Image (cartoon, rainbow, N blue to C red):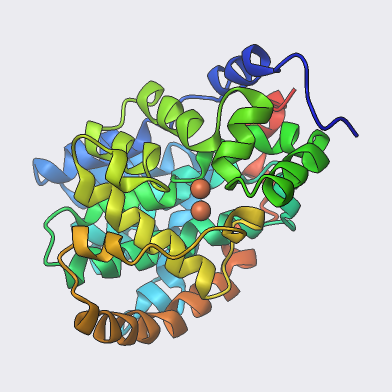
Amino acid sequence: MPEAVSAFPTEEILKAAERLPPFPAVIWKVTALLRRMAPVREVEAVIKYDPAIAAKVLAMSRSAYYARRYAIGSLSDAIVALGDQQLIRVVMTACAARYFESEISGYELKEGELWQHAVATALIGETVARRLGKKKVLTIYTAALLHDIGKSVLSFYVKTYMDAILIRMSRKGLRLLDAERETFGVDHQELGEMIARRWRFPPEVVTGIGYHHRPKQATSHQDIAAAVYVANRTATAMGWAGGIEGLAEAYEDEIFGVLGISTSMVGQFWTDIRSTMGEVKQLLSDESSIFGGQPEDKTPARASGYHH
Ligand SMILES: [Fe+2]
Ligand SMILES: [Fe+2]
């Protein structure tokens, strides 16, 4: 296995990222409808237009994590029971799922692991956002959910060049991002930023994804990037790791400072997080019924084989 790769497959990687299907329009349509307080049946019609997304929204709404005290019989029940803010996050999650469904096994990831990492990071991000009293819960949730989207493209190449990357990490003590950049000329953070921009997410979300490992380097929206950083590190520490990402990366406590969390508050913060963990576990254990095996789940992402 080559230690030094002479020709970077950068061009090919960027083209693969460009081939990702656009983010499902249903999310923007639902957001617009809710903003103008459209009737439930209109919201329902928009979600139903994409059966794969509708099935996921319904399944998530029925999970113990979201259903709480309501019995959810239909999609319209779900829309009413979830309320606008939760509904948007559930639809966002259902839309994002399709990009994590194809085989993602680079980074020593097992099947479904990157998706679980994404969902766990998003739910922790939501808690971080609340804890901080942020009004930007959806922004942080979205950026956290999609923070490693670059890996869904890069994974294919990482698999081929795994030895080169691991050697760079162990011999040179490089972090994953730097090892990726040395090997491919681009890293998963930068790639994710590019993808989010192509998908026309707002600048805060783009920054949250583009600086999730290096929040202090962000020149704007540093708080969003810091929240995603903390959520990502926490998800990893709690066992929902995004593959080899957790390796060789020290926990930068100073980032808590960016979020206004003092050392003495970190303990309380962990207690808050731990209390949501049981619920996150619940949702992820329902995950196979929510995200797996529906016949209509032949998504454009999988069908087009965008990795190649
Ligand atoms: Fe990452
Ligand atoms: Fe991650």
